[in-house]
Image (cartoon, rainbow, N blue to C red; front, side):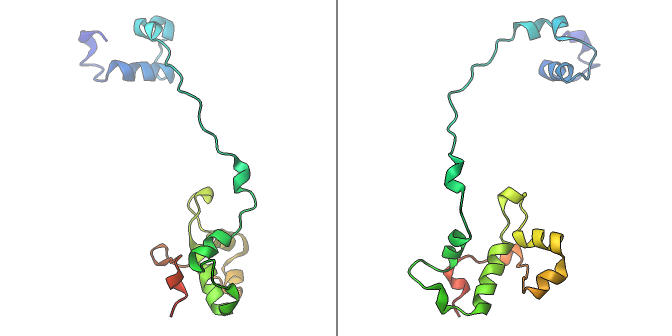
Amino acid sequence: MNERYRAELPVTDRTIYSYIDAGLLDARNIDLRRELRRPERKKSGSVLRVDRKCHMGRTYEKLIRYVIPKNQAKERYTKEEIREMMNHINSYPRKKWNGQAPIDLFVKIYGQEAAERLGLEKIPSDSIHLTPALLKK
């Protein structure tokens, strides 16, 4: 950029080029000496893609196994203990739902009254325990 305009436009050359590319200034790329000289960047190597089929068919089993280890039978727990465990699991925020928990989505769709009738209770994020210690008393 010309030195005489530095006081009027106190930004870097790169910023000016970005503004022009975004259409914020009335110049074109052909008017820019530096823009025409800029070489293209080399593309990086191939990106490793994960096969999405490995995620299909997943259930709550993985989260349940955080609380109840594989060598323990689920049948030995009472309905209240299972409900408490599921409240903790359903209060755990999910990345695929923009950080919302399944219980929050249920309340948005069906209402708080339906959640209360089913015994669903939101557990605060700092109180969620997905460990075997949750069901030990």
